[in-house]
Amino acid sequence: MAKITYVEHDGTEHVLDVKSGLSVMEGAVKNNIPGIDADCGGACACATCHVYVEGDWLSKTGDKSAMEESMLDFAESVEANSRLACQIKVSDALDGLVVRMPESQH
Amino acid sequence: MTSAEAHVVIVGAGHAGGTAAALLRQYGHKGPITLIGEEPIPPYQRPPLSKAWLKGEADAESLALKPLDFYAENEIDFRANSRAVGLDRATKTVQLSDGSSLTYDHLILATGSRAIHLSIPGSDLRGILALRTAADAEQLKRELGPGLRMAVVGGGYIGLEAAASARALGADVVVLERESRLLARVAGETLSNFFQARHEAQGVDFELGASVSAFEGRNGRVTGVQLADGRVIPCDLVLVGVGVIPNDDLAKIAGLEVNRGIVVDLEARTSDPAIFAIGDVALRPMPIYDRMFRMESVPNALEQAKQVASAITGRPAPSGEVPWQWSDQYDLKLQIAGYNFDSDQELVRGDPATGKFALFHLKGDQIQCVEAINSPPEFMMGRQLIGNRKPVDKTRLADPTISMKEVAG
Image (cartoon, rainbow over all chains, first blue to last red; front, side, top):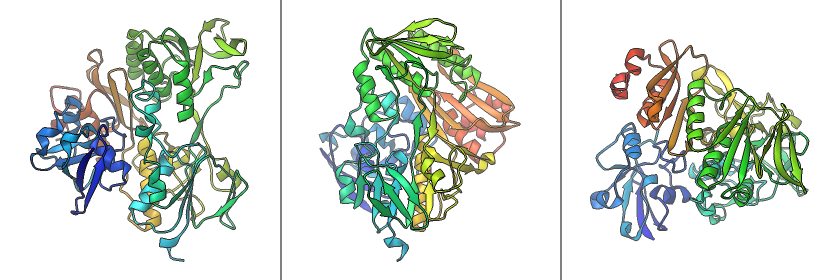
């Protein structure tokens, strides 16, 4: 279990307890948090679960696969701390994680 | 009554219906929402049924669109095992299979499509399965096992994905396809040949141009598939994946405009302004192709769920999307953007032999559709170029040493 803060583009915060084993994307979608579309349901096929990982958390979210890297390269408003939320597995080590959402996923 | 208090009845609790219910709440709809589902479980994702779920890499909980308590918490009256059997537009009433009825202010028909059943001798034998619902997938998973031989009738995406998963589970697979190539209705020849070669390399057998005439059985259970040329293909189970038909009967009975799919506008509204239709069942306008068509894909269901939730809550409609879909087989990720309408050229970028390439279908110098295998840049940039109708330099597009960003300029 990890406490994760999802920050919408307008600043609205949602703090959720997300079960270990789920992805950061699933934590948002299953709780109906706006801002993460996840059209493909986590198949790393659509890049509509783009988030910015805040602060020092980026290194703890693991490495990007070549597929994720490649999908992100073509997403909008990508920054150094961009990740696809479907590719970040939740574990106790991510307790306190803060992710911010871009203005649009499309 | 203000529209914020309106009762929204959603018939069909698949990906489209379930998403529409959730988005209505997310967009601030305050009135009652009733979600009618034929299946015993709340809305779930169907795509993994032939892929990760079948291989045991995903469980029921991960398939669910939302946790069970989501519906009660969000005051969505989800009714399982329930079906709409009648629709009276004059009184805005839907009759349900249990004899009760509901009145609506807005009705959303998200009735989806059903797998085509082969009406040939022996089709009632045990061991002949379809793959549409979670219950179908559970039965298929129970029946599959190492050393067993599965015959797949129909070389479309469902059949090929199930074939790949069955091989991963150690089963033998033979695919029987009526046409002379796989994916005949949905992909070009280059892609058909590529997938056939990849499946053959994984040990899948193919019978192309094979018309199925009957199923043979013993003690009530299937033992083989008889072809029109008289040959019998022995098997332990059969998966039939020969396409779907839209569940538009309720709309037909109610006198809505229907043409192999319920006709809707850009807001997903039918010919009755109080009734919407979304997902597999809707025949919708696609301005970028200047025509109407029906799409059987999750991205389509999601887009139309957004359209209907926007229309009901008074939000501006989402800007038109470029339709897309994907398929996972073995280590191949296929991503398709657009539909191959009106193209006059197929351009290959990359070498199919490497398992990493993209097929661009062009109309003049405009991209109509891209089929990308393990090639996200081609898919992502291709999708943008389809959407903005920007002409491309075909010589540069065909040269994989020039990046897609440079190609797009």
